[in-house]
Image (cartoon, rainbow, N blue to C red; front, side, top):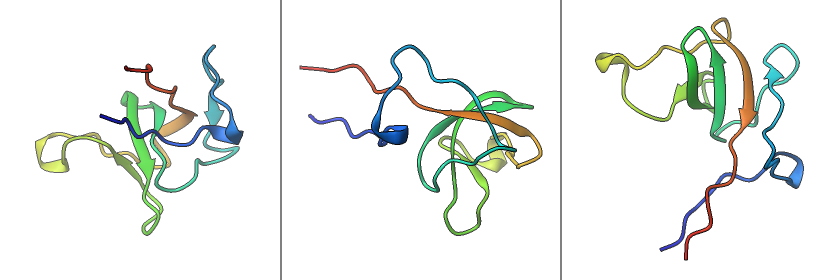
Length: 86
């Protein structure tokens, strides 16, 4: 079984933990899962390439998924690579 991952930012994974990037400074590429921080604490989400909004990677709005906006997501960082499995 293979595990697909998102490409690392700038071609590198930062195993020591990436620094947080302010959404005021830069937004992630559309469609790439990132760790976000803001009003709802930590949420894995991506920027929708069509509507240019934040979309959580789980749940739906009817069941209480956080509604993420540019106003309540303040920072983001790339996800770390998953562990290597054999």
